[in-house]
Amino acid sequence: MEKAYSDPLLGDIIFRKRKGIRRLSIRVHPVKGVSVSVPYMVPFAAAHAFFILKRDWVVRTVARQKEACRDIQQLDSVQVEEMRRQAKDFLPLRLSELAGRYGFSYNKVTIKHNTTNWGSCSARNNINLNLNLMRLPSLMRDYVLLHELCHLRHHDHGQAFHLLLEHLCTDHVLRLMQEGDENASEVARLAALSRARYPFDHIFSKQIKQYRLV
Image (cartoon, rainbow, N blue to C red):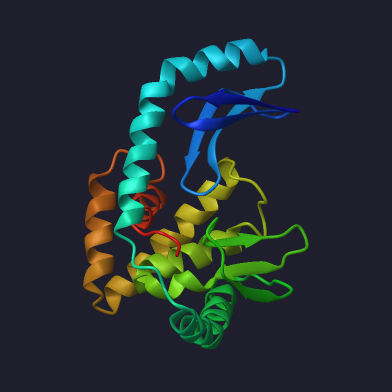
């Protein structure tokens, strides 16, 4: 169930009511816009009041996203096709390597070009990877691949998923440190200082937000 509210500055705000949603939350996406997740038993009027309380934060977030997008160098068709070629050559092999190391199996992998996510895993255990992954540092790229592999066992973002991802990230970073990877050593240092429940996941998630899909 959905309702739209037209904000004079922000445009349409989509309120989505779904079973399984436990709390009110607001998502600000540079492409999809602003949406509010509403628990099924919460009235839309209460959700709208919640949005009004958070509206100043939403306005600031939208402004930051627009400013960040101005700094992105848009790729022409030739650059996109070259990145697609590189992604098709590299990403399936790297995914297979990590899957073999940690005991995962999947049906097929597809390289896509979109502006909504870095990767996804379907209910049929097909993995989609964004060709923009070739723009990421190798450690962050591996993090996205591990994230999607974990969805083969847990198709949500619940505690079991995060526990598995954190375990794999920890092992992966330690392996790279043994190989002398300085970036891995820095991530491990930050994880040791972090108070987050899942420090490696938290650090990688924060770092990857510095990059935009183009």
